[in-house]
Image 1: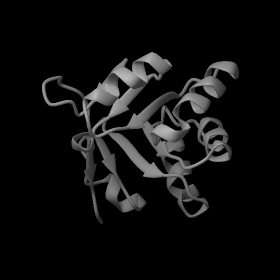
Image 2: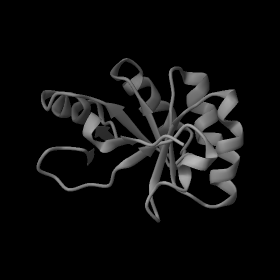
Image 3: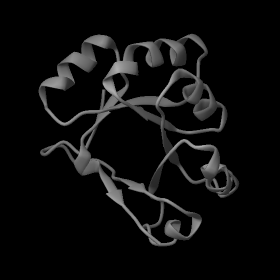
Image 4: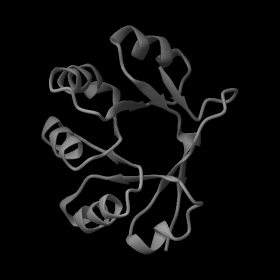
Length: 130
């Protein structure tokens, strides 16, 4: 299981961006995070073209399918969608990893028992503005 932002396990951070210009403010080889939205398609295409690892935050199963099809390495979502999303990713053999937003350590066990790829604590997400 992948753990991002846990207090005693070193991990990469995700840089939450809101526009293409914000990418320049992130360190080299950063993992970029943005929420899926049709308004963000230009940013997603820019990330694809430049082969930048990115995570997409999603709110429903349709967005999960879009995120996987758009080449997201990580798909972040809330607990409520976790099990269904993980099953879909495994069924269709998507390359993306499912990461669930959590804030309490006791959720790690719950997500592990569901077979979720990983969890993300709020500390792992750094907001970048332009």
